[in-house]
Image 1 (cartoon, rainbow, N blue to C red):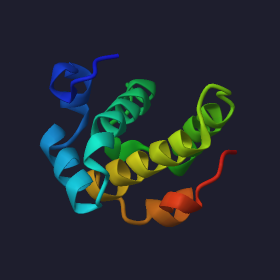
Image 2: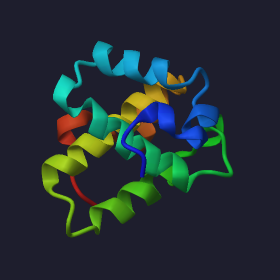
Image 3: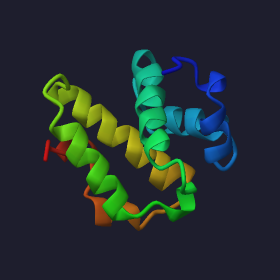
Length: 115
């Protein structure tokens, strides 16, 4: 996976206004500056998994399935899972503008637990 968001063409075409909206949302949502690269990497992984869909077509089931797979990854530590959930919440709620997704996916930052 590319560490640089601008280096990934699949993400460029998947995000409605490109990476800048996601990066701006990270700042607005107080994602730690030293973690923002990892937020982007985690979002890239999710987007790669929904390649056939646009962000506007992502369902709660898509998010739950992805989090379920991530939750079974024994290499992923709890804090990394929380970071992943926070990154997806920012992507879906703030960037893709699906405010109802927050309720239906249960993505609430530190309250998210591994499935």
